[in-house]
Image (cartoon, rainbow, N blue to C red; front, side, top):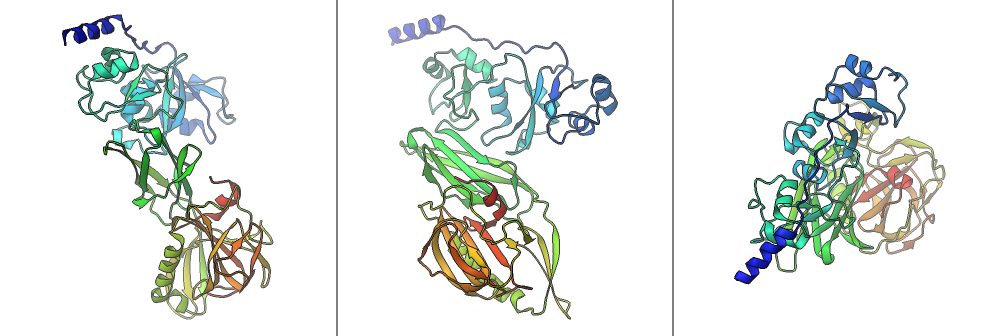
Length: 464
């Protein structure tokens, strides 16, 4: 015991103490113009007067700002460097940001006008002052139960005083089990956020989440540890892709803008579990409104519409492990650039010669086109439904795998059968006017994990 203690003391004495250099305090901070910025919005963001901002930048024309242009922000006492915008990612917290960037709390609070640490929702933009030569820490460690800061320091080739200082601990004795600490060692190249150590990385994109968007959740764990997650209280289905686990989730078009939880959990080989939960911002899709007049109220009756919707949700919720598609979806319509109604549009259904009004939203994308035009499969997949429905008329549902489905409604004729494998671009039906319609048109929906999402996104980008 004495010999072990002596060796431990020698290691401590021989280990150099890394002291983080103080941030430079000379000069005023510089902000880089972003898309959509104006002097008015910049002044409001940094809580400085418009007159002072203009006076501090006499050579800048406020009416002719260019992306990437640098301007000085006055009256931010004690703050220097370049003021960069960073979107808060999953795993970031005020504490982890302070530890990772080594930016003092008072500076973060002043720049972002923070009142509470809980305001750092995923998807929110944050201003960070970056000094020339400033080092951002990336290597993370997590103390286990009974593990001291001394033991962690030896493993990292550091010392407990440096770890305590970098992580703003009250002392070398105050590291808690499960806390995410940063070390001066080189990182492993993964995203350096405040996640528990079982997770090499975890992300959600795009951010911020928008009503009707398709979200991609990626998780990478150490030693391929099993992981699970829920988003907005919906369990996610993960599938292996290269060295990651990937899940797709839809954000409902009618979900109220606000903040919602994303929770991930890893089951360790020793039966312990590490979990992390953070609130993610959902913003409005800024959808328009339209009125739809109908002659018949029968297709608005909840006794008809609700069972049909529940049936569709049951069909589109299972996640087939095989991913049939690859790359961007193609348009199912003959005229791919002509739309009569877009996804997410808020609708008021009225019945002629009555006082009936029903509120809803457009759950798909309507293309121009008359009776009998061909309808094409937007991506490869298996037909899982092909039959008439009351509201949606002659309907076809194609399973593309991984919980992604296409729904094609109101057809005059269905040209495929349940169980058929279809290829991208294959003719699957003909445009019609069956079900709840005001005329012949092609309606296409994309469902992700049982939620309708904006089909245009699938025509514009490739999902994994």
